[in-house]
Length: 276
Image 1: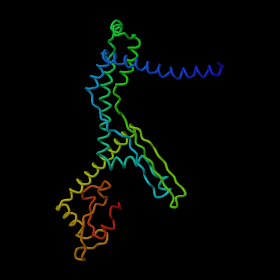
Image 2: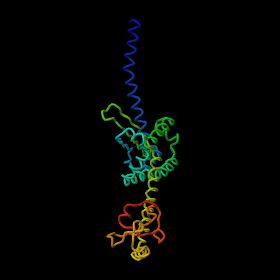
Image 3: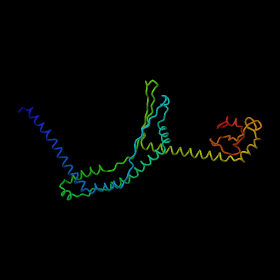
Image 4: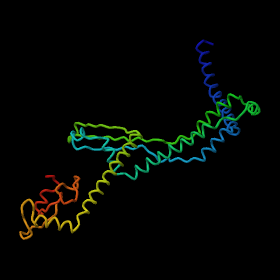
């Protein structure tokens, strides 16, 4: 038999033996795995611990695309402002999403503390009775416990991409940014702050306007001789008289005599919310 034939024979034998070795290994490993599952108190303690904790699983990363109508708009576009606008238009969704993540984080902190308190209770004498090496038992137990350890989703990412394509499709431009969980949370909190400021501002404006009573309006008209303080028009001229805030309420003006004057409807409309 030539050297080449011997090499081929050895190679063929190896090909035949390797599958047998793998099968034997799997049989032995599965037997050991079954033994560990049945006799590991740590494994069963973790299963019991897992059953006492619930985490939200419906947490997905988000993607938004913004189509710009010009290259200039794309260049000037703030992807952070887009994130804020998405929070505004999907406020309830973001509130629910971030609430679930925060609850998962708090719940996982408790779970992790309890998980770390657990340890293997098997002893070498017990393992000898099971006809398995102590080191093998511990290794399989460790891998098995790590595998069943709960790993809930504790964050999300939001990717925002904006793009512009020229009318004939010859040129395409784009930019994108991926916001991590803490960035999304900070943007959400900033939105809440801005929303609160707007609500407070709106409330102040409504409150200030409500101070314009019929009695106060009459006193201002009388003080100004029932005529427009800009053009001099009166009701006899067909003008409809208004009591105007010199400094508009929308810009901090107060409803007090010194900030009020009589204007005709035409002058009042022309002035709008300007400060003179």
